[in-house]
Amino acid sequence: MIRRPPRSTHCISSAASDVYKRQPGEYSEGDWMRLQFIGTASRNYHTLMEQLANAILTQLNPKPGVTAELQASAKAYCTKVIQDHRKDHIYFFNLFQSSTDIFIKFWSLGALEEILKNYYNEYDIPLRKQLHECYLQIVEKQPGVVFCSPYIEAKYAALFCALLNEDYPNYWPEAFTRLFSLLQLEVCSNPSIKMKYISFVLSCLLAFDREIVDFREVKRAEEHKRSVLIKDEMRKSVVNDIAFLLQQVIQSHEFFRANGHANIVTQALEVLEKTVDWTKVELFTENLPLIVQFLGVGELQVEAAKALYAVIDKGMDPAIKISLLKNLNLVYILSQWDPKIPGHSEDFQKAMANIVNKIGLMYLEYLADSKVGVQVKQAIEESFPSVVEMAYKYLDQEYYAVSIIISEFLNRYLTLLKKITLQEFHTQSVKVLLEIVMRKIQLPVDYFAGADLPEISESFELFRGELTTLFVNLSSIPSLQPGIVQYIAQTIDMLKAQYNALTHSQKEVILYLFYRLGQGLKDLGKILKEPGNALTRTVETVLGMQEVFADHLLIVATALEGVIRYAGYLKCHAERCDSSVSYTHL
Image (cartoon, rainbow, N blue to C red):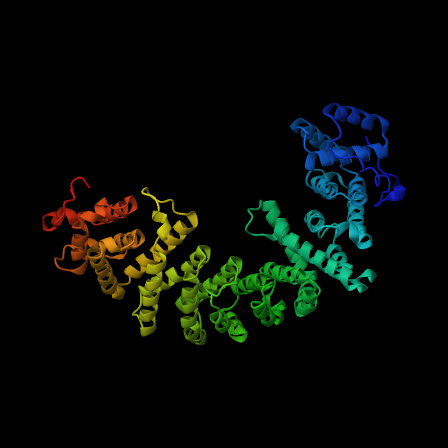
């Protein structure tokens, strides 16, 4: 077995401080075998550390000319080192501290994670406590070693969570006390150093959510049990410290931004977003007015929107939630945003659309719930038109992914309209929606550049699918059906009269909506059997347009879909249609 570093070095070793001068990849495959033999026989610590460093670099950052076989040999050697030193965590902490190479530091922390994952059951309680102390001493006494790179800081934070998952609260009850005590160290009198520690603590909290809490990840029963246990303990002893830290950072946002550390504010917002899901929302309500203001601050707005969404998504009494929205004046503030104004990123538009979508769905849920009080419903009805108008704005902007988000609420809204007598607002509202759908559902002109069927991008295909669902739902609202049928009839008449003057895109969308109209109409067969009605006449017009079936392949395909949709009508009334199309063949 390889001898552990001298006790005098404990968490710090100078033995490997100068062994990284040799360049990675200098060894041949034969050298690896020779070095492995020498390392095993000589028990020379200096040689072993040099050998390991070169093995790590050969594996992770090889120079040109390094063979796959040599990399595999280096990986096997590194794996064996971890196995041989699985109860010698100080060995890897020493390597982490001594090296200035990012790859070696990163590997050292990964080796410790590997030990926690596969060999930690071999650690007794005193050895575990020694590992905890070693971990904390490095970040307390040598912050530069940890904060030398964002990647290393994130990896060190992930290691904290790995230890937390194994030992908190039974074997490491003081874990969070020690973590937050970093902010009280004497060196934190230096603002620049304190900001690094604040960032690190926030990184640990984010890693905690990512590695232990995240409900989106499928967890085994034991992992879920551990997550619940840790959160329960944190609710008793830690959440107030978390809330206080977030409040301090958010309220001091101008200081952090002025000193080039807006990222710390975004970290705090992200922690709030993750933490509010399993803690009391009251811990963070004092911060919410400022967070609403952050929607207008470019470098903070995405995380601010995500944090607000988390609060809105939080389960709470309807009266409390509606009161919270009213006190924040959030619906009005959101209604002042115009998604079409240039300068807003797609991520921000998505975050905002998620908020509007969530508010809209929540309103519909509360309106349908007989247990929700009259006053709450009255408050919802007052602001509901604004939410619908906001939804239309996000449907009508440039990013397909944003429009897809908001379509969830709009489809639920249309489902509601099928069941009620439409008020004037609803009637005018759906007309606006119909206009947006018919305009946005049209294929871009450049899709028809070739003679063959165009390749439609996946994002637009998904977007068009959502718009199609909206159109079908609009068509299925009884009071709107006559108007929509009449509109489609008029567009088909225009298609016939101006066929050669229209673009391929205009032709295709008219025929596409004609085809989809049949999905929304109830009792389609009964309607088509009524001679002289607008839909029957429209079907006959399409069947009589020979030019449609000699046009671009996509237009022909779309027209045929319409013919198939109304095939039942064709069998009964083929003799009344003036068309050269062979219905039997179709």
